[in-house]
Image (cartoon, rainbow, N blue to C red; front, side):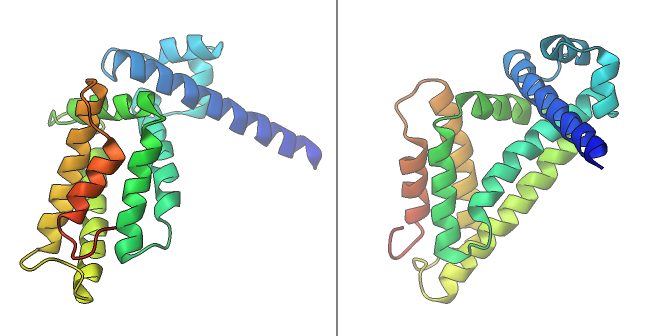
Length: 196
């Protein structure tokens, strides 16, 4: 019984090594200029070895890298609603200040995925829709208790907040004097009666 568990553990560790390498390669080169062979070389295995763990090749690797990033963020949002959810969004922005490479990879890929035929476009479309719905729900919950300023539409507040966060990240990556977390909080607070 210990044998399969040991093999499973080794396989899981190898997948994590491959994801770490994919993250590094995609961050450095962008998706289009990266190859499975290069990722395999970073890990020290063959391309076939990478494909054993990620049969969908480069597209599956990219999706797994992005899903790993999202799952870490979703842990901070888990079971939070209303004001707590909005405050957690600011916390996510705060944590990203320590993850420049992740933020840079995300920005590069989000831009690349605007091409209609880009293989990861459906991931970004679904992700933006899912986040917009969750942030809209949080603003609506705050509004239901009188916590939104007069005339604030929860959907508009959500989309404006998302756009601000995306833009702040891009400015930060280009070394402008922004504080992703504090400036995100300022935008969110502009819709609230009582600041976070």
